[in-house]
Length: 73
Image (cartoon, rainbow, N blue to C red; front, top):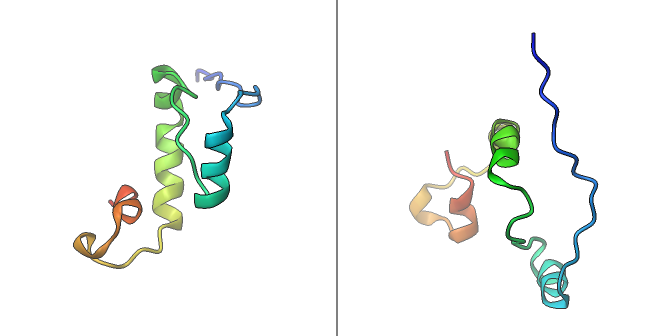
């Protein structure tokens, strides 16, 4: 059995004042290139599994806002 070494996620990254303000206002912010393509592949299944597990959205896709559409199955 092979072991996959996961990328470390404990490195600090500088963000702009605007990004911090957007996070405070919206509760989320897009920070481009936090992970490279290989790192995304490693975490993709874990993130999808968690999103599926904790998704409580029951409305039809057409009834959702943009954020609500982001986590559809």
